[in-house]
Image (tube, rainbow, N blue to C red):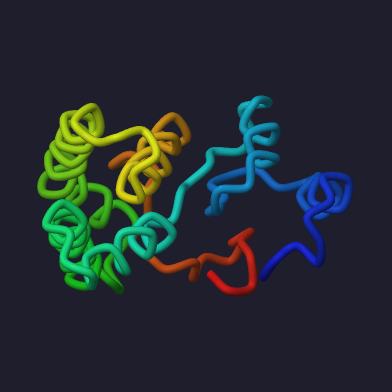
Amino acid sequence: MDAPRRRRWSQTAKDLRDFHGVLQVDGYAGFERLAAGNRVVLATCWSHARRRFYDLAENGSPIAAEALRRIARLYVIEERIRGRTAEERRQVRQAEAAAQVADLKLWLERELPGLPGRSKLADPIRYALGRWKAKRCGWPAWTAKPCAMRWCATTPKA
């Protein structure tokens, strides 16, 4: 499934009524309902978090630039394991990426309180941290694949 034809929950629920597994999603809050039944695990796309830091880094934000560097390290791991079996990817993610992801989360949690609440930089940090609860898929359920999975439910511009 590419993108829901519209952001109406009834259409999304209909499209996914028989789906069981990992669903790569963007920030649309409606997807949380699918995870409530334990038949769907939500995987949040790193590219959605990454792009929120991009313009800020381009405009000189050292915190946004550091966030991009940390996310880029995860993309390097994903590039290296592309084409391997699911079990091999899981093992590499656990061995190499899990600690980096945990460190990224802690770093974001440390940075956020030092920013003004309405800061442009606070928004992407809150976005990333707000999706951590959905991440239950190995390292957690963030994926470095930019919405390339069979069931990627995202907006067309993602």
